[in-house]
Image 1 (cartoon, rainbow, N blue to C red):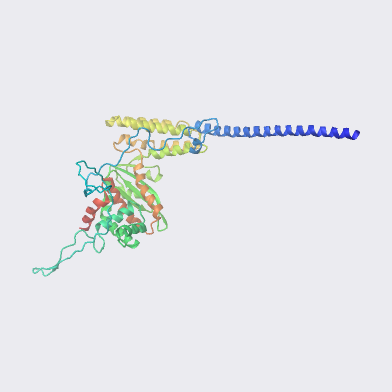
Image 2 (cartoon, helix red, strand yellow; image 1 turned 180 degrees about the horizontal axis):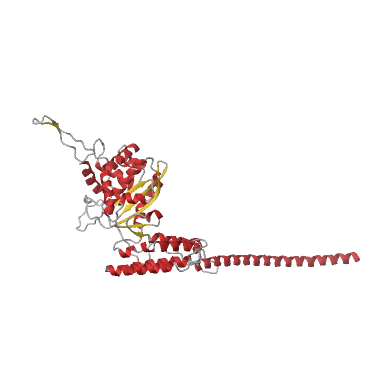
Length: 460
């Protein structure tokens, strides 16, 4: 009897312990779920804190974070694809000219083969297409004549051809366009000519004709070079390049009328003096590279470079506390200067406005900045404050050097596509042809149309 009672007691204890175990497991699950929610809430608070810090310093969160929304914020409707509501569609306009007119009519009904009575109403449809072309071959029969007076055999000159060249003027201009406007490498030019025109040319042919083009336009290049020291305003800039495995500098000098590319071993002011002349008295627009400081001419320093450096400083991962204020202050001064320029008329107004903005910029730059990065940019601002507002004194001068930077960009793209130049002559040829093409573009002309006139003049 005692054993049975003990057995029952043990069973009861086992039941109680089992129930306690179940309760503990439920409690543990509740704690785990609560811990998970607390961890998620903690991570959300950390992310929210980071976003608030970015907003505090004036930065937008990354686009990926902008797209992601938290659980408690309803997701916005996705942006409508296509044109905005109410936008009127635009189709291609009818051609201004018609090269060929085709009249279409039916002799019988296409459904029942019945007789048709022609109606007065008609429909029109225009089709624009590319006509397949091939090389245009011209055969010249050159008849000679004997002069009885001087005893010489004479014959007429073949018009519009290049001496000792199988291909003609348009071929020369076309491959120059493909090379230096469309930025195609030699092998791609040869492939295009062979596939479309059945020209059967090699890369070597392309190279030789580009050399010939550079020799033909060499005199025009020298004329542009001599014209540089007569310019009232000139933008210039430089970029690195590799020529025959060596470091070289590609310079660009550009105005509203002409453009000059020039390869040099040097990045010093000697290049500027060589192109513009020691006595140059116009206005030059440039960035803050120190070698430009002693170059000839009245200077306008580039506002874009200064504001961009201030913006980059303010967008650092851990920006200086003063960076945003410094960046916005520079932007505001520049904006006010451009607005004030619109109201100026007389020379006295320009001089007084120039002096006022120089004083304002110096006062802003010497405000008492604390961080060394801000102090560095502030010192540069003070140093060049007199040269940052030349555009107020001189009508027509641009406050930025974007013109020269845009002119260098195609050459940078070419280097990425082609690689470096293998010879100094190759770089020189590029300078010549890019200068002529760029000058024509500045004057609203195309190498394909106006280049022929220049070539014939050079050949004459």
